[in-house]
Image (cartoon, rainbow over all chains, first blue to last red; front, side, top):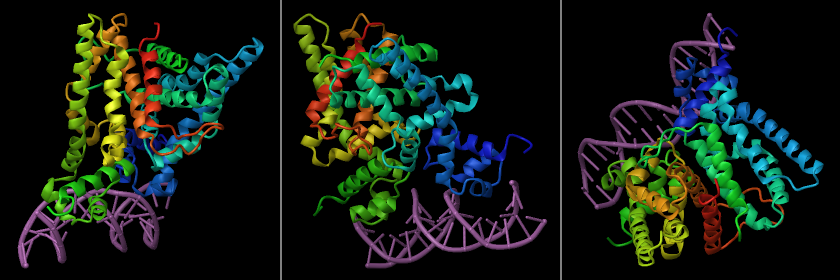
Length: 211
Length: 211
DNA sequence: GTCTATATGCCGATAGAC
DNA sequence: GTCTATCGGCATATAGAC
């Protein structure tokens, strides 16, 4: 317990390499080499490669989802206080903002965002199932609050629109790296606060689009 | 050249397994076993695993992009004939419809859609770079036509909104598999034509949202 | 062109000394 | 808790017979 803990060093290295090269393409050897620890220490501290991935996701997702839950509580309180449905923009802000602003409060979290963005794109694999397990019932709560916020949109339609919204969100999470091909007159460097507002403008307009 | 060609059998098997298990998690052994061909035939016909992926994507993406290009030509002709900007819904229909309706015309293409959906989510890897290479300049054309269709939206903003739209599209492409968790009163089975209209309603509303 | 057999190397996981 | 050494397996790729 001298330096940053061995356990933490492994988690940091795994987070980065899983994000950049994917879970399958990353070997335990690469992780332990980058972390400067022994190969066997991964199995000692975590038990297996799958369990390591689980721990990588859990470390950041747990506080993140606690924060999301708090924000949803607040949105609900405000809705009840004003006897109005919850505001759809506030609901989706609670969903996307804690993740996208994670970099500000947590210096090492940059790779985690990419990692989760990719986990959302994984079909069957360990990444997706571990992520879904840890998201728990929070997705249902977001869906139900979106339905309350937009009572004129049928549930079935809103389900798919929420699907589209998650697609935009996860695609944005994945796109830290500068796009290799930029059209003329377009810069790739925008501050995250502006980007969040752009995403919310876009998403809210799509969710409440006329049918 | 008796049965379906060895080359085609390999392409079909690789397409399915790459889509379901990802490129990295799929071995040449699994591919040749499913194709009922010899292990060595992959290297004989394609040269390497990377080159096989390239061929898998190219086989379907080339005619697909030719079709997209035709549709864009048509949208441009109609715009010129009416002396009006191109219609944004028609531009995006040209982008998404050829892919999403591929199943109807090409029986084996189901896995290809998932594969490309995942390629769009890969950050650095072979999948993404091969896909981008083959998309060529078509993305630029879509961007420029979207700008023409929505002259009141600044290019920089429209660039990001297009990013969000591609996120929704690729997320939809990836979601053949039934979602493990469905909210109450929501079914996952919708015909693709309806889904395309839902996606276009959502996307057009987002692209032309007030700023 | 298609096969068998194999070269060469990395993989995840573990045993056992310290 | 941390190390070395190694097991058993599967990976990609290729050499060479047919």
